[in-house]
Image 1 (tube, one colour):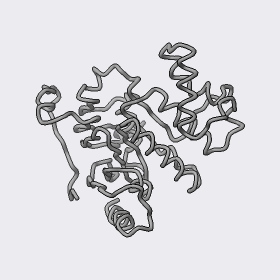
Image 2 (image 1 turned 180 degrees about the vertical axis):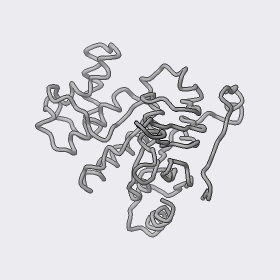
Image 3 (image 1 turned 90 degrees about the vertical axis):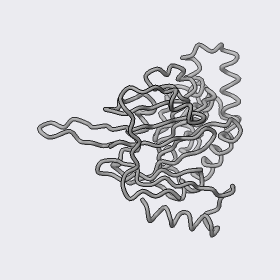
Length: 274
């Protein structure tokens, strides 16, 4: 266990030779270095939500980002995805600085809500990203069909979102993220609104896809059991502003059951840090 009574800070100068970092060892899937972010407020000083955040997301591993509301977890994920700029710091994707990264087909993002288009069928929703990449019609149909099948939705290709349960809609959203065959998958509490049974099913679907495709996963959660069930490592963040408080390896065999002693002990230990 790595525990930090003070924030974990990885500081680099504004201009660095990235070959120096790569020479230390294989580049992680995601390297987050010294990231800070503030938002302006009218008639007040800016609100700092992230302060010198730094950690790695290793390749072919699942990393949980844990913390209370307001510690900047979702903001950090948006910065990694290129959806929001950082005020300072460096993000690298497979060793490439974010500003130089161009192959966004390799990055998947699963949001808190499913964001399905109600006028498109399940298959058409899954195909959406492939259409943007100008994938041919036959290949697009086949890949979407296989993606839906992989999340247990064979036979529902022509159903519209309004005809699907919440859990099925979440599966369509997961299939849409997986159909592009990403190397890195970002998840922002996409299962938080599901009941426990459906949540467990989605966890299993995610782990199955991750193992089969060797995807590097970073997911935001405030659910300790979810973190221990899914992750190989937990990054604990504290608010005011958001900082890394602890980085905890989760080296437990799978499948993991909350009632098992080693799993429940890991959950209790994380609870003392969050």
